[in-house]
Amino acid sequence: MQDIIERDFGVEIDNYVRIDFDGFEQVIDALGGIDVEVDCPLQDPYLQEAIGVDRIEAGKQHMDGDMALAYVRTRRQGGDFDRARRQQRLLMAVRNRAVSANLITRLPQLLPAALNTVETDMNPLEMASLARWLINMDLAKLKGFVIDANMTSFATLPLGDQVLIPDWVSIHQALATLFSPATQPLLESSDRSWYCPGIEEMTPTQ
Image (cartoon, rainbow, N blue to C red; front, side, top):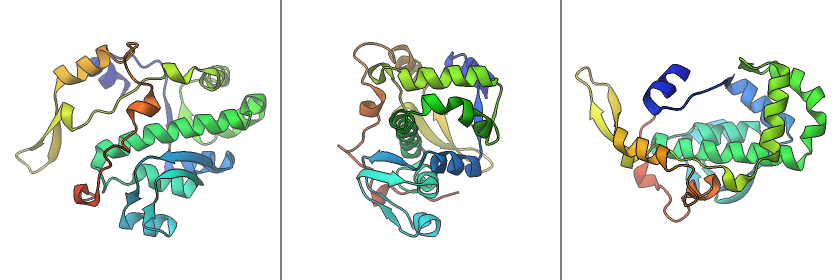
C-alpha cells in the first residue's frame, strides 16, 4: 500500500498503523466514546443489525465503539465516496476526544495497551511523539480531500468486475493545491450538509 500511494500519488508514507475492527471498537470504548458531528443523516438496514437502529440523525452524536464502527463501515448510502468522508470526520472526533480527556499525560500508560490492538512499524517513542503532535496540531492547517465521482469514472471489466477508473489529472491537481491557503480545513471540506446523499443514492453492498 505504501509503495502504491508513493508511485501513483507521489506521496511518501513514512509509517503505518493498521487496526482491525475489534481493535477499533476497543480504542473508541477506551476513550469513553467520541462525539461525532454527523453532517448528514445516515440510514441503512445494516445499522439495525449492528446497533439496533436503522438511522443515525444529523447533529452531534455520542458514539461508542459499536456505533462508530457501523458509522464508518456502511456504504449503501452515498457509496464508497461518502464512507471515506465519514471516516475522515470520525478520525477528527477521536483526536478531539483525546484532547478533551487530556490523554497526553496518560501516554505512558496507554501506549502498551495501544500496541496490543494495532500493528505498526513505529516504536513506542515514535508513537508517543506522533500522538503529541496530533494533539497539539493547528486544526486550521489540517487539509484533506476524498477522491470522488468528479475524479473517477465507473467501468465494468470483461470478467464483470465493477471498478473506478481514476482521472489522474484531476487527482494530481487536487494534491498540488491541497496545502494552499485557499483550501478549506478538513472538517469544512468534508462537510456535506449542503447536499446530503439520499436514499435514492444508496448502492448495493457487495
